[in-house]
Length: 350
Ligand code: SF4
Ligand code: SF4
Image (tube, rainbow, N blue to C red; front, side, top):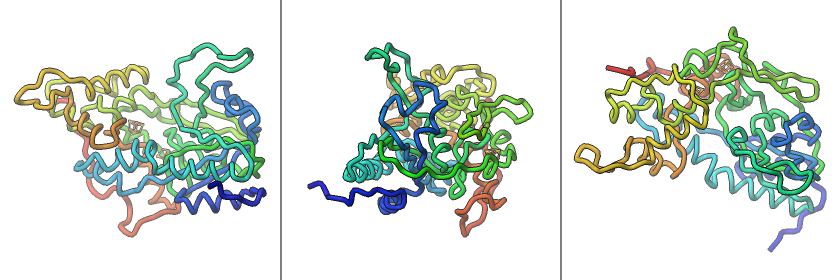
């Protein structure tokens, strides 16, 4: 039965309900903040009557990164910090409940699944004058527009509460909600370059290289590094022996250096997914038959989709360590800073 709500929906009422669902952070942008967005990333092209974009975050538990930092466990992060957190009911159930709550107040609410806009193949518009599908939000820019935080130099979204530790989703609605203030550029990321120095595939250019992406919202310019997403994808999805003990075990003779590749993101995905999903003749040494058995098992035991071998060695773990040590974020821990022991990286050839 639909619960009747008072028809007045204020920002405070919406946020209090969101927090009661377990959502950690909520930010609100008015639709005007997207006026300069490219047509295929503009929420008004998904929902022409939209007045507000609500961006929500749930935290990545710091402990889910521990196993990879220590070099002992990969499933915890894949499930509780990466694909599982983003693509299961951890976020989607509260997002759905929040959308229903808004609709119980008489407004339409489009729960938005944060896809990857850059990888959508263009097709023809389906109606005269319409924008070609798929229209996708750039979820990090949407979060920036909603005042949740800023995009760090690493291109990872940073908040004052958790630093780089959160996953994002959104709701586009015709509810006219009061927007949150924008975060001042540089109030979280101090350009320390820890992300650059600790990225295994050299995917994040140093600030001196001046390879920059930017966006302007309400006259405020935000900048971040033009990250090499192909190289990053190789380290994340298992094409980098330095961060994948599974690839190193199954291909001891492979001399493949992710730092020297010039693959597009799509090429890197195809390369990595082939290694984890294709089967070949089973042998005594490889009873599962998968090309890289460890990646296939991680995919199965994790959440049946994507998995992550790098776990943001530079852009999440080093960044978080730096932000905690310099008191730039609010959530701190009794056991002190995150990185406690000399870090590991595997050789390309022994
Ligand atoms: S490590 Fe974090 S704070 Fe330092 S430059 Fe990179 S994104 Fe900014
Ligand atoms: S996920 Fe790993 S490879 Fe990608 S940018 Fe972050 S540290 Fe570099």
